[in-house]
Length: 76
Image (cartoon, rainbow, N blue to C red):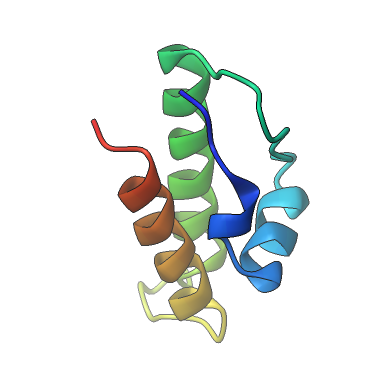
């Protein structure tokens, strides 16, 4: 599956980079690579998006938006 980085905002690309995901336009990612990226984004959402008490943090919406966008551009 090819993932076009232009579908993501600069802020979303920065969040992705912070967890080690940098898209290479034109690369054909395997299903395993896409699932791995999705898992890493979901893990980051849970780690950075919520406090230990389950309250949303200041960056929760940004991570949720990124997760939603990734799911949108990588249909199952």
